[in-house]
Image (cartoon, rainbow, N blue to C red):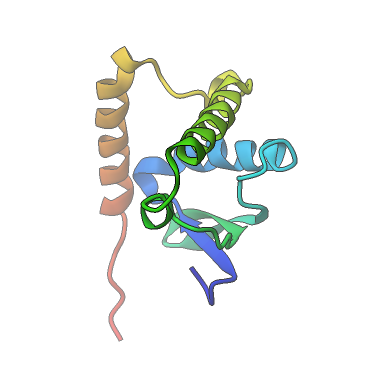
Length: 130
């Protein structure tokens, strides 16, 4: 977070694929899902390895854990229903096959592949003297 104005999210080598996914969602759903932060920039920092990053507007909202204690039960249910509807709508949004998460059965394969790829990328980093 920078000056409570923007949020910069970097994607290290083992989650580079998440960059494309998140960028796609933020670009296409900004006007459809009211709670998504606004995407301000999507770039790649090239510093011996690539560091994709997203810059979003900082959204100052109350955090659920800080505000629900004194809330009447009916208000809690209203918030939960609205949040559930929003999350359902978000997950129903179609995304291209190349950006989809793997099936649960493929999760272990994905994690192991990302570890191997990250190890290869990180292994290429060299320290500069002076």
